[in-house]
Length: 621
Image 1 (cartoon, rainbow, N blue to C red):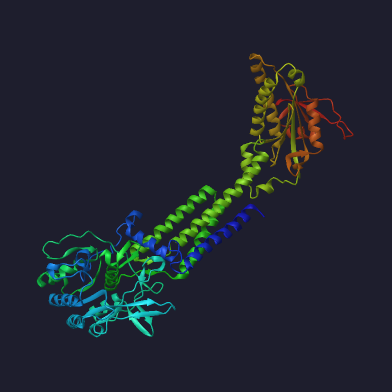
Image 2 (image 1 turned 90 degrees about the vertical axis):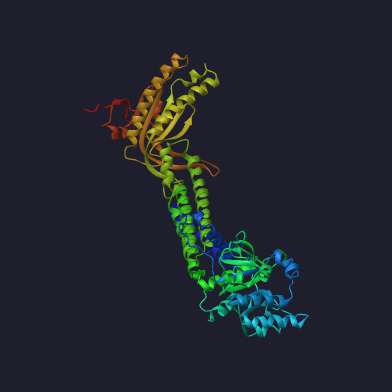
């Protein structure tokens, strides 16, 4: 299979593997793996919204504007500890104290009060419940019931005390479902034992607006909650008892102060508004874990009320769209990476992933549209990683194969051409092929006698200098160094690719080598070294080209009668001569001036072969 098709096929398979991982995590039950399932994706979106400026998003809408309709009365650390001077005992408070608070809120003009405090059992003193109930009849009040999952998996409910329920304007549940340990939202309504229970936030808004709340967008059956931000607390000038909100969207006042400040001072704070009462003291433990950390449950209910009143909802794209993107985008990146150079492809893939993340965050920040981020981007990243590693590993192995076979025998350009082939292995024709080639041999004359007067170190040094210079010329003219036989060089012009001017390149390379040998010999003599001459033979004909040898050790070479002829010719050549065959001369007749020599006999040939000595390149008129 050609490399390109094989790479595309494997890239598709790797991208689908990456998508399968993304889909498995996407479809996992919420909370199974909070850092990698849909809960984790929600948390990433919430954190990104909180730090939208870091993503260079200009003019991001603020979802933290104060809502003048909501006021919080907090059972904070100060209030929970009690205040003897104000007649407030330590928490838990007697229910008549909540009745007193409602009386004051009624006098101050509050429109609705809602308690994120449980009153599940009757008081030991029935008078306490009666006082609380009497106050609830004056100011519409929403109480809390608890809905829990039983050991059998069914929903169990616990309602407020019997003396309190009839006096309440509404009852809403406030239980927190925390998949994976995170509070992400709450159903506006749940069904338990055939009864529908509205959430505390929905019941409170309905009591305030006197309208049924409908058409809340749900994601996984929940109204998703926006992040909340807590602020430092300090007194507000001109409002006795009021404090700068510890929740950015609402004003708040401590429970103990709401009981002691003059009603006239409360009026400007609570008149015509929703008053939410609940605990924020650490010791009381009414906290949930969100993307922003541990937050009082009271703040979550306040945020729900704010979202319902302002119609600010998080909407998720259809599930099919998320799943389609998890499959499609990694596939596109894998195909791009399969077609491009690995370094270029990886860079483009990374830029595409960053662009997708920016688009996803922008949709959420500007429009509160939840488009999956971590599973799509994660699958894109995995597809890039898998495909990139495949290409680097496999193509690296192919490069090593080509380099091991040719790297020290041909010019870098030839190596690049082999690697650029659709299938480098196929381009090598490892099984052998018949081609027309020009075979070159050169041999140092008198080397044996010369070596007898030189040390081994001197011989190796001078030979390496000679071979390095000769091979450089062969490479420059597109030749392939087949092998070194002692002081002999065998090269092939046209291996592994054939070009129309292979023969002329071989002649030009031989002439340049003879010129350089003369120059090097002159320099050697000046330095006290032995000079030498070289005889060369060149023949053009049909050879078999390919890997030859054992399964454990092969050599890319050429064999055939025309190889033997070239070997015969270099033996005929004297030092400084270039002897070529008749077939070679036929192709370079217009290029060189020659002198015909005495024909030579070659083993296996009946008639002697006509041969020619190359004199020089012809002078162009």
